[in-house]
Length: 483
Image (cartoon, rainbow, N blue to C red):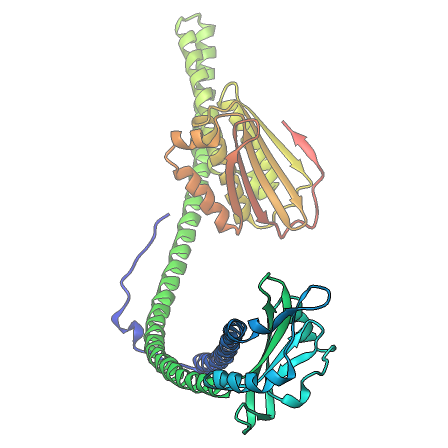
C-alpha cells in the first residue's frame, strides 16, 4: 500500500483561533481553592486536637511526678498498718493543718488548684478543701480506676474554681488526674487527685496553632497562585498547540482519505485490467488456439491418409496446442471469474477449487457452503475471491499444502470466509514469503469493511479467516458440499 505524504501549506493555521482558559479551567480553579480551604481547616482541627492531647499528656505526667514527690516527702510517714496488718493511709487531725501548709507551698509553682488524697475505701483523708475531709466518694468511676492501679486523666472546663491561695479563678481549663499511690511493698494504698490549670497552656497552643495556620495558609495560597499562573500559561500553550495539531490532523485525514480513494481507484483499475486481459485470453487467444487445434487435426488426418511419417508430428502439435488452450482458459478464468457475475461467489469459488486441483497435482481443494447468504455487491464478491485466490496460492507456494478447505458461512448479517490448509504453520509460512500477499489480503478485507485474521491451526497448518458484514443475506442458500 502506498502512503502519500504532502507538505502542510503555510496558511493552514491562519484561521485557527486560540481560546483562553474556559469554564473547565475556572471550575478546576474553584474546586482546587475549595479543596485547599477544606484541607487547611481539617489540618487546623487535627493539629488542635494533637496539641490539646499533648497538653493533657504533659498534665498527667506532671501529676504522676507530683504524686511521687508527695509520697516520698509527705505521705510515707502517714502509711501505717491497720488492725488487719494491711498498709493504709492514716492522717491524724492534728497533723492536717501543718501538712496542708507544707503542701500548698510545695504545689504553688506547678499551677495546681486542688488536691485530694483518698484511701482504699474512697475516703478523703486529705483535701485542700478542708471541709470535705472524711467524706466517701464511692461512685467516682475515675477514682475506682486509679485504685485498681491505672492512672486516668480528663479535661474539663470549669466556670469557677478556688485555687490553693484561696483565690477565685473563672472560666478555666482543668485537667483532672487520678494517680494510684503505691506503698513500700508495691501494693496500692490509695489515690491522689490533682486539678491542674491548663488554661494558659491551651491558650498558648491555640495561639501557636493560629500563627502556624496563618503561615501555612499564606504559603499554600502563594503556591496555589503560582501554580494557577503556570497552569494558565501551560493551558494557553496547549490550546494553541492543540489548535495547530487539529489543523495538521485535519490535513492528514484529508490526505489519508485521498490516499484511500486513490488506492480504491487503483484496485478498481487493476480489476478491470484483469477482466479485460482475461476476456482477451478467452475471446481472442483461446479462439485462435482452438482454430489452430482444428487445423492441425485436419493436417494430421490428411498426412495419415497418405501414410506419411509427418502425421505423428502433427498429432504432437495438436496435443501441445490443446494444452496451451486449456492453460489459456484456466488463466482467463483466474483473471476474470465469469461466475461472479452470473452465479455469485460460491460458483466462482467452486470453479477456483476445480482449477487449483487441475493445475497442481496432488492438491485437494474443497469448497463448503453452510447457510451462506448471497452477496449483492460485486466489488465485495471480487475482493473475497481475490483473498481466497491469494490464500490458496500462498498455501501451495509457501506452505507446501496438500489439502485446502474453503468455507463460506453466514450468521445474521455476519458472514465468514475461511481458508484452511494442512501446510506449514503460519510463522514458518510467513517467513518463507515476503509478506506482500498477506498485506494485500488485509487491505482487501478493509476495503469491504471486514477484518482478516491469520493464525496457525490447532493441528498445524494455517487458517485465514475474513469476517465481514453481508447486507445481501436475506435469502440464505442451502447448505451444500462441493468437492
